[in-house]
Length: 433
Image 1 (cartoon, rainbow, N blue to C red):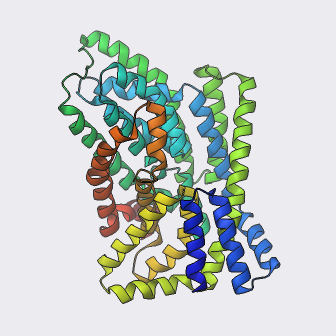
Image 2 (cartoon, helix red, strand yellow; image 1 turned 60 degrees about the horizontal axis):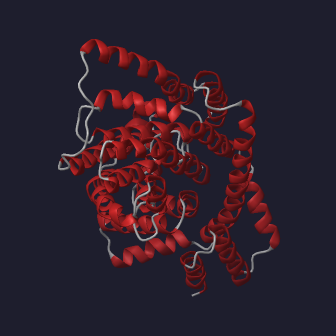
Image 3 (cartoon, helix red, strand yellow; image 1 turned 180 degrees about the vertical axis):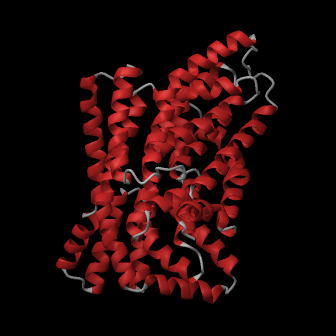
């Protein structure tokens, strides 16, 4: 009964709008007094959970996102992709999806991706008479793809809290991420097709097109090289995720200042301060949530939850469906960091007992939390997209639901019920299944 009350406290506080960190803090205090845990347990758990080199990657990727957002890197990527798709009606939906995937793969932040790519594409879409409800919906639904295309900070946290290989977690989400990018692009094209007022790019003579393509490619090369350096270094065994994040910071600073020339050296101070503020908030949240997770594991919650699920059904597919529903609800209520840290210690033991690889569970978690971030009524990305694009959430609601039903849910079904989709690359490159 005490466990149920603890979760009710957490749920009620979140619904009332209390900041996540205070909601978790109040829940931890309840469990500590209820179950009699000592202060030494709390502080030792906080210290041991944060004493990890892997966590250095988080503030560094936050810094990369800030630098890229203020630099001209997002614009270069958008122009490069648009050059190959501009003649298609609704092509900016493809540009939005692919740009969000590439940008998100570099900075690892859905919010930074939406802020940067959205601020670049929204004026272009409005100028070309796109239905802005559709445009904003595509942008906000494509932004979470960064959780799936490595190097994703969410997968770093999943690997860290589950004591798993970071590289294998990265690899497990690549195919679902590419599939989701393609489906969002197709749904966006379908929704734009009936709007004949959309202005498409005029066909250029071959010589002029070649000149334009060469120019946009040259401008985009520094941006496109970044994920090659980061992922090539990690997958080639030359760098850890933390070292690759450090290299990404240095490269982003040099590219933004000396190549794209959109950031001055003195402006880096503001980016560093924003990074420090975000990092401090995240680290305190990590410490508090890891105490709660450790308590839940010690109180045998995974087994209790498994027994509860088995009392409802013995069918493995039904059990996986219930786990997916649980994860979507978590994604609707919490940010991706909190949801990952809370669910990982519970999901990995559950998955193992159901015969699901932890690395497949990493992909399932990523797709679910991304979908939760755009699923009403909470849907933080929905409201952020509305603000960036200057459009009412009512106009975004129907297109968002279309993308959820025809892009996110198919990706989730395939990822959940066809293990090879997420395990093919980890098995091919690392021999992990």
